[in-house]
Length: 223
Image (cartoon, rainbow, N blue to C red; front, side, top):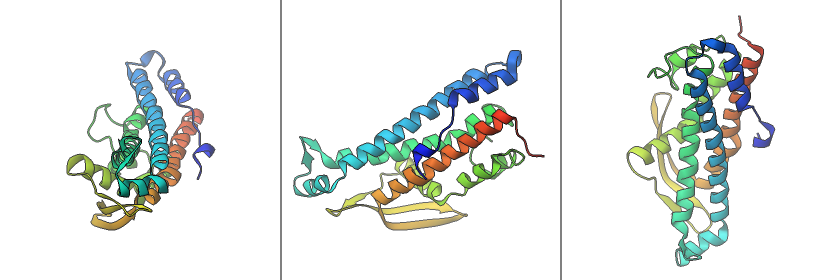
Protein backbone atom coordinates (compact mmCIF):
# COMPACT_ATOMS: atom_id res chain seq x y z
CA UNK A 1 0.00 0.00 0.00
CA UNK A 2 1.36 3.41 -0.99
CA UNK A 3 1.18 6.39 1.39
CA UNK A 4 -0.05 8.60 -1.44
CA UNK A 5 -3.17 6.47 -1.85
CA UNK A 6 -4.31 7.02 1.75
CA UNK A 7 -5.55 10.38 2.98
CA UNK A 8 -7.74 11.86 5.68
CA UNK A 9 -8.64 15.33 6.86
CA UNK A 10 -7.46 16.12 10.37
CA UNK A 11 -9.22 19.47 10.47
CA UNK A 12 -12.48 17.88 9.37
CA UNK A 13 -12.40 15.51 12.35
CA UNK A 14 -11.98 18.47 14.71
CA UNK A 15 -14.74 20.44 12.97
CA UNK A 16 -17.15 17.50 13.20
CA UNK A 17 -16.44 17.12 16.92
CA UNK A 18 -16.94 20.84 17.46
CA UNK A 19 -20.27 20.67 15.64
CA UNK A 20 -21.31 17.62 17.67
CA UNK A 21 -20.57 19.19 21.06
CA UNK A 22 -21.66 22.73 20.32
CA UNK A 23 -22.11 24.67 23.55
CA UNK A 24 -21.46 21.53 25.59
CA UNK A 25 -17.76 21.61 24.72
CA UNK A 26 -15.76 21.84 27.94
CA UNK A 27 -12.29 21.80 26.40
CA UNK A 28 -12.45 18.52 24.49
CA UNK A 29 -12.25 20.21 21.08
CA UNK A 30 -9.01 22.00 21.95
CA UNK A 31 -7.49 18.76 23.27
CA UNK A 32 -8.55 16.98 20.08
CA UNK A 33 -7.05 19.72 17.95
CA UNK A 34 -3.73 19.37 19.77
CA UNK A 35 -3.87 15.58 19.41
CA UNK A 36 -4.61 15.84 15.67
CA UNK A 37 -1.78 18.34 15.16
CA UNK A 38 0.58 15.96 16.94
CA UNK A 39 -0.49 13.10 14.70
CA UNK A 40 0.11 15.25 11.62
CA UNK A 41 3.56 16.30 12.85
CA UNK A 42 4.60 12.74 13.67
CA UNK A 43 3.53 11.53 10.23
CA UNK A 44 5.78 14.18 8.70
CA UNK A 45 8.61 13.30 11.11
CA UNK A 46 8.33 9.65 10.04
CA UNK A 47 8.55 10.61 6.37
CA UNK A 48 11.56 12.85 7.02
CA UNK A 49 13.57 10.35 9.07
CA UNK A 50 12.78 7.50 6.68
CA UNK A 51 14.07 9.54 3.74
CA UNK A 52 17.16 10.56 5.72
CA UNK A 53 17.89 6.91 6.50
CA UNK A 54 17.54 5.90 2.86
CA UNK A 55 19.82 8.73 1.80
CA UNK A 56 22.52 7.94 4.38
CA UNK A 57 22.56 4.14 4.16
CA UNK A 58 23.39 3.77 0.49
CA UNK A 59 26.09 1.29 -0.58
CA UNK A 60 28.66 4.10 -0.84
CA UNK A 61 27.98 5.32 2.71
CA UNK A 62 28.08 1.82 4.21
CA UNK A 63 31.36 0.99 2.48
CA UNK A 64 32.84 4.35 3.49
CA UNK A 65 31.91 3.70 7.13
CA UNK A 66 33.73 0.36 7.00
CA UNK A 67 36.82 2.12 5.70
CA UNK A 68 37.12 5.24 7.85
CA UNK A 69 33.72 5.78 9.56
CA UNK A 70 33.21 9.36 8.38
CA UNK A 71 31.51 11.10 5.46
CA UNK A 72 31.91 14.83 4.85
CA UNK A 73 33.42 15.09 8.32
CA UNK A 74 30.45 13.40 10.03
CA UNK A 75 30.19 9.97 11.60
CA UNK A 76 28.25 7.82 9.14
CA UNK A 77 27.20 5.43 11.89
CA UNK A 78 25.79 8.23 14.03
CA UNK A 79 23.85 9.56 11.02
CA UNK A 80 22.16 6.30 10.00
CA UNK A 81 21.63 5.01 13.55
CA UNK A 82 20.02 8.30 14.59
CA UNK A 83 17.74 8.15 11.54
CA UNK A 84 16.70 4.57 12.32
CA UNK A 85 15.90 5.30 15.97
CA UNK A 86 14.13 8.58 15.19
CA UNK A 87 11.93 6.95 12.55
CA UNK A 88 10.99 3.96 14.68
CA UNK A 89 10.35 6.01 17.83
CA UNK A 90 8.16 8.50 15.97
CA UNK A 91 6.15 5.76 14.27
CA UNK A 92 5.66 3.98 17.58
CA UNK A 93 4.63 7.22 19.31
CA UNK A 94 2.30 8.06 16.43
CA UNK A 95 0.42 4.78 16.74
CA UNK A 96 0.56 4.65 20.53
CA UNK A 97 -0.98 8.12 20.84
CA UNK A 98 -3.99 7.24 18.69
CA UNK A 99 -6.24 5.75 21.42
CA UNK A 100 -6.04 9.08 23.27
CA UNK A 101 -7.23 10.92 20.15
CA UNK A 102 -9.89 8.30 19.41
CA UNK A 103 -11.33 8.63 22.90
CA UNK A 104 -11.68 12.37 22.27
CA UNK A 105 -13.37 11.72 18.93
CA UNK A 106 -15.75 9.03 20.19
CA UNK A 107 -15.69 9.27 23.96
CA UNK A 108 -15.82 6.05 25.99
CA UNK A 109 -13.53 6.88 28.93
CA UNK A 110 -12.44 9.85 30.99
CA UNK A 111 -9.93 11.87 28.97
CA UNK A 112 -6.91 10.99 31.12
CA UNK A 113 -8.04 7.47 32.03
CA UNK A 114 -5.24 4.90 32.22
CA UNK A 115 -7.60 2.47 30.50
CA UNK A 116 -7.10 4.39 27.25
CA UNK A 117 -4.54 2.50 25.16
CA UNK A 118 -3.89 -0.45 22.90
CA UNK A 119 -5.55 -3.17 24.94
CA UNK A 120 -8.47 -5.55 24.41
CA UNK A 121 -10.81 -3.77 26.82
CA UNK A 122 -10.31 -0.44 25.06
CA UNK A 123 -10.84 -1.91 21.59
CA UNK A 124 -13.92 -3.81 22.76
CA UNK A 125 -15.58 -0.50 23.64
CA UNK A 126 -15.60 0.37 19.93
CA UNK A 127 -17.00 -2.92 18.62
CA UNK A 128 -20.17 -1.17 17.38
CA UNK A 129 -18.29 1.41 15.33
CA UNK A 130 -17.59 1.02 11.62
CA UNK A 131 -13.82 1.24 12.12
CA UNK A 132 -13.58 -1.47 14.80
CA UNK A 133 -12.09 -4.01 12.39
CA UNK A 134 -9.34 -1.59 11.36
CA UNK A 135 -8.63 -0.86 15.02
CA UNK A 136 -8.26 -4.55 15.76
CA UNK A 137 -6.01 -5.06 12.73
CA UNK A 138 -3.47 -2.56 14.10
CA UNK A 139 -3.63 -4.14 17.56
CA UNK A 140 -2.83 -7.60 16.18
CA UNK A 141 -0.35 -6.46 13.50
CA UNK A 142 2.93 -8.41 13.76
CA UNK A 143 4.97 -5.48 12.43
CA UNK A 144 3.52 -3.25 15.15
CA UNK A 145 4.44 -5.79 17.85
CA UNK A 146 7.99 -5.99 16.52
CA UNK A 147 8.18 -2.19 16.37
CA UNK A 148 6.85 -1.85 19.91
CA UNK A 149 9.33 -4.39 21.27
CA UNK A 150 12.30 -2.81 19.54
CA UNK A 151 11.42 0.76 20.55
CA UNK A 152 10.65 -0.15 24.17
CA UNK A 153 13.98 -1.95 24.46
CA UNK A 154 15.90 1.04 23.05
CA UNK A 155 13.96 3.42 25.31
CA UNK A 156 14.00 1.51 28.59
CA UNK A 157 16.98 -0.86 28.40
CA UNK A 158 19.58 -0.38 25.68
CA UNK A 159 20.08 0.44 22.03
CA UNK A 160 19.77 -2.56 19.75
CA UNK A 161 23.10 -3.10 18.05
CA UNK A 162 23.29 -2.56 14.29
CA UNK A 163 25.93 -4.37 12.27
CA UNK A 164 27.25 -2.93 9.02
CA UNK A 165 28.19 -5.78 6.67
CA UNK A 166 29.35 -3.34 3.99
CA UNK A 167 26.29 -4.00 1.85
CA UNK A 168 23.52 -4.02 4.47
CA UNK A 169 22.66 -3.00 8.03
CA UNK A 170 21.53 -5.76 10.38
CA UNK A 171 19.87 -5.63 13.82
CA UNK A 172 21.78 -8.20 15.90
CA UNK A 173 18.71 -9.25 17.90
CA UNK A 174 15.13 -8.09 18.37
CA UNK A 175 12.99 -9.53 21.16
CA UNK A 176 9.32 -8.72 21.75
CA UNK A 177 6.07 -10.13 23.12
CA UNK A 178 3.51 -11.47 20.66
CA UNK A 179 0.45 -13.52 21.60
CA UNK A 180 1.72 -13.80 25.17
CA UNK A 181 5.10 -15.25 24.17
CA UNK A 182 8.58 -13.80 23.76
CA UNK A 183 9.65 -13.72 20.13
CA UNK A 184 13.33 -13.40 19.22
CA UNK A 185 14.56 -12.42 15.78
CA UNK A 186 18.25 -12.57 14.96
CA UNK A 187 19.80 -10.88 11.93
CA UNK A 188 16.85 -8.70 10.93
CA UNK A 189 17.74 -6.54 7.92
CA UNK A 190 17.28 -2.92 9.07
CA UNK A 191 16.28 -1.55 5.68
CA UNK A 192 13.77 -4.35 5.12
CA UNK A 193 12.13 -3.69 8.49
CA UNK A 194 11.92 0.06 7.89
CA UNK A 195 10.38 -0.60 4.48
CA UNK A 196 7.77 -2.87 6.11
CA UNK A 197 6.98 -0.15 8.64
CA UNK A 198 6.81 2.61 6.03
CA UNK A 199 5.04 0.75 3.22
CA UNK A 200 2.72 -1.46 5.29
CA UNK A 201 2.24 -0.40 8.91
CA UNK A 202 2.10 3.38 8.39
CA UNK A 203 -0.44 3.16 5.52
CA UNK A 204 -2.52 0.74 7.59
CA UNK A 205 -2.56 3.28 10.41
CA UNK A 206 -3.61 6.03 7.98
CA UNK A 207 -6.36 3.76 6.68
CA UNK A 208 -7.64 3.48 10.26
CA UNK A 209 -7.61 7.28 10.57
CA UNK A 210 -9.50 7.53 7.30
CA UNK A 211 -12.11 5.04 8.54
CA UNK A 212 -12.58 7.04 11.75
CA UNK A 213 -13.07 10.24 9.75
CA UNK A 214 -15.64 8.59 7.46
CA UNK A 215 -17.47 7.13 10.44
CA UNK A 216 -17.61 10.55 12.08
CA UNK A 217 -18.77 12.20 8.86
CA UNK A 218 -21.68 9.82 8.47
CA UNK A 219 -22.24 9.38 12.20
CA UNK A 220 -22.12 5.72 11.31
CA UNK A 221 -22.49 3.31 14.17
CA UNK A 222 -23.30 -0.28 13.36
CA UNK A 223 -26.44 -1.59 14.98
